[in-house]
View (tube, rainbow over the protein chains, first blue to last red):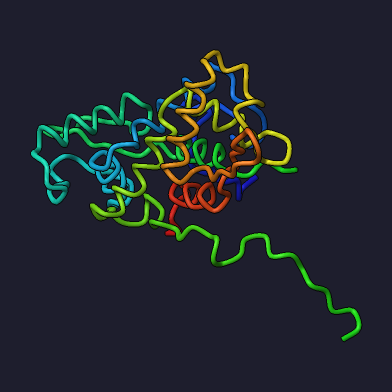
Length: 122
Length: 122
């Protein structure tokens, strides 16, 4: 009992996004599954949004605020607009700290999209 | 020497699509990488197109023609239009056989998109 350790929960069940869909190669998607998955793909279907997403995803500590992103060649309001869109699509989560809103990639969403694109077992 | 076997090449080098980009979490994408990757995500960012893609991807033998797809709730010309868009985005390849054009998922593209969404090693 003395060496019992509490491990940090990296992905508490109540925060994890439920996987929407089976691999694309497994069976034809239903209309509902296609709606959900297309929303995520569409959010990443814009070059500026994709650059911002990868800027946040690869930033130190896995999070970034608008103040950290300056080299994408669009104005700060445009950056904010796109980050909001990515949040609405469920790809980013956000938290306000003082003046700035910090964005973070939702790892379970990445995993869920990766699963969609995996080859279904034969 | 007597038990040497020739294994089939599942993905010959000359057919494989070159992976466009590192994982989204590895480093910020360049403008060029974002253009290439966004094109693929955008093609899957429409619910009808996504259903058609999964219908082709999950069809027997990994290929399908318009004649095999009837239950997505859109007309045959619309099906053809979307399949063409998916082909233009590099997600499907096609081959005409007699009256019909058969579409097939490009596995190296799926693998490349899956890699984009994988978590970069720390």
